[in-house]
Length: 91
Image (cartoon, rainbow, N blue to C red; front, side, top):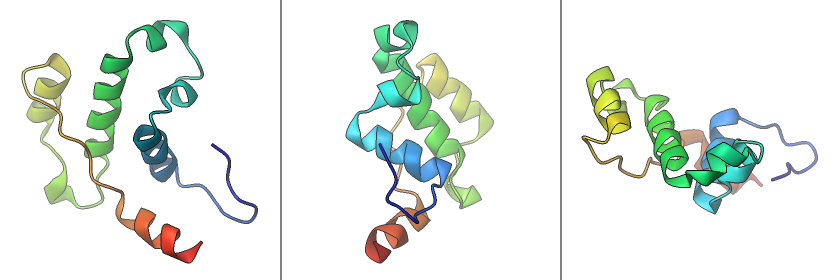
């Protein structure tokens, strides 16, 4: 995943793009142990993306995060970062 010349990267947008494109290998730098358990890495990634939502009301509580990570709650797909859509239209 490379950036166009003159375009700055926002970490959450880059991570979200990797998630959408299924490029977990890029996020974990091809770590063999992580790649051996892609479903767990994906769950952690989705939980992290929920945790950094710009609107605090959209973020799960700490209790919910723990339940997601422990497998007691299903982790829904995270929404697209709010500024992400602006960057797509400006390109």
